[in-house]
Amino acid sequence: MRGTTRALRHVLYCSRIRGDHLCRQNGSRKVSTLRAAAVCSPSRPFAEKEINRYLCQTARSLSNSMASDSAGASADVGKSGPLIEYERRIASGELVDGDAFQVDTLRLLQRLYDQLIEHEDSCHLDRYKASRKAGRSRWLWSRLVPQSSYSPVKGLYLYGGVGTGKTMLMDLFYDQLPSNWRKRRRHFHDFMLDVHSRLQMHKGVADPLEVVAGEISDESILLCLDEFMVTDVADALILNRLFKHLFIKGLVLLSTSNRAPDNLYEGGLQRDLFLPFIDTLKERCIVHEIGSSTDYRKLTSAEQGFYFIGHDTARLKQKIFNLIGKETPRPQVVEVVMGRHLQVPLGANGCAYFPFVDLCDKPLGAADYLGLFEKFHTLALDGVPKFSIQNRSAAYRFVTLVDVMYENKARLLCTAETSPIELFEKIVTVADAQRISPRSSSRSLKGDDLDLCVDNELGFAKERTISRLTEMNSREYLEQHQSRLLGMAKREVEENTDALLV
Image (cartoon, rainbow, N blue to C red; front, top):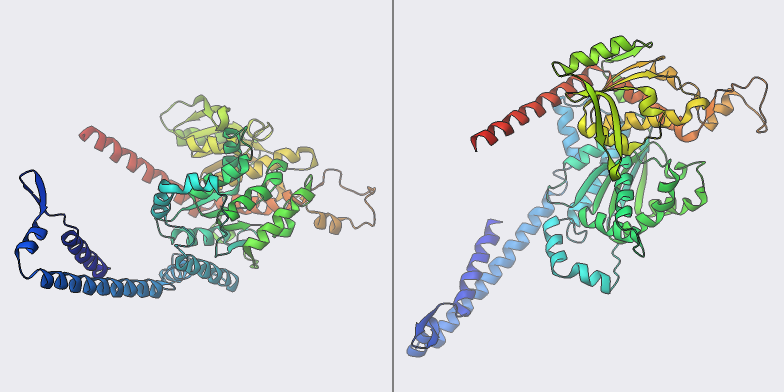
């Protein structure tokens, strides 16, 4: 790289000489000092010859330096990336040694990483190069002449059981990417909320989804989505058109999910309109199953933590008040997306208290929960019930709430009717229901459990929720949460100190 820099300096120096930039004022005319010297000197042809020879040498030097740099960059492929970082963390003891399924997945992630490094220019990953191009002509030209540019690199769709390390592997991959790339890592809930918010902003446009896809691809051409799970009909109906636009604009997708692509939105309303998205997804992504049966979240030193069995409201409030400290908890209002507001019964010092019915038995969703945890880092949830067909909607909201809390590394204190596993024992998939009560028709039988909730999406999601509740009450998770709070407090003190010094 230094050789390239030196060669460029030589070229710039010589171009200044040849370009007649060194001028002096001579009466009313500007006369080039070099030109004037050449006119007066009999050695003008010799000087021209020497300048030409020097420029040719410099050009050759520049070419060789760039070739050398390119070879060096190519040699770097395979010397960094998620697999190399994983091996380093295993060797240092930061991670427990994974199984063969995780290593196979890491090889695929390493291959994706290497391909992206190799095709950095053709994928337009560098945000600074892309912004210069956009500033010159891309915005106007793309509207005059519609362009399509599929990425030369296929994405990756990872799916498998709960706790198999999908999120950890995605984060490992994402953390190794160059900082100047147009990349984004988001939870699927958060991503879809952003999409709907953008659609509201572009109401009245002929094809708002194309405009939204253009905005997203301009910001991040590499999109990493965690926990791809489609349960909402509004999401299902727009995903195919949205991602068709995104893929045409060159987007590369890395996604994790508990479900294989063919099982997404299984049994959902108007699923026939969703099926083309599955074909689009499989066309633009390599689909890989992480077949491990190990739940690494349950390998933590699980303790009771702040999960209390039984409806002991006084005990829960005492715990949350101890965490709040000297501040007085009072009702608060949190602003969430699109002008909505969420009433917090009691809150102070980053801690909030809610009865379960106020947070999960009302028509709230991911947007409300995301808004809540932008302001609070700890939640006391009072009275989590056992879930069944009678409160299926509340079960869905509780699953979403735990997902949002886990993604935001929040702390949960709760009272619950029973243990996490038993909370969901009445929630089953179709296959589970068939094993529980085999039948040859859809008619109810005398011995059927009328509280049983047969729901494939919820039946799969419950395993993730049980696993996350277990980890969130482990010593490791709670210590990490406390360390994060101390780090935030330290940064706040430093910022206030800097402000006072200024």
